[in-house]
Image (tube, rainbow, N blue to C red):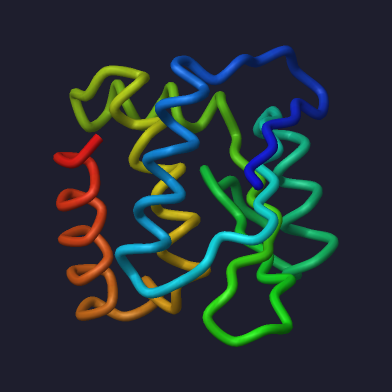
Length: 137
């Protein structure tokens, strides 16, 4: 099950049914069953607070993913997304807001599927996977 929540802002995901089906298909294509996935949309400041409190990071980011899964090959997690940061990144990368939002949404599923983005090689693989699944939307 996929749920979308807003924390300190008002936000509605466009094409909810199609987006949920696409995210579920992404997890399945990666060999995972999607159990419980919560997206929490928020402001930059809210996500900065999460970043400071739980990760001891003092910087803005577009997404933070918490893996709550206890069963192998099953996805269960909470994904926090700064809508402000998504808008800013869309402008910076010359993408539409919707394109950048989809990239961030699938990025979270890929993290929960075991992909990292800390090293240059991991980041390259993550971008390739994101682009692959974005084309399948």
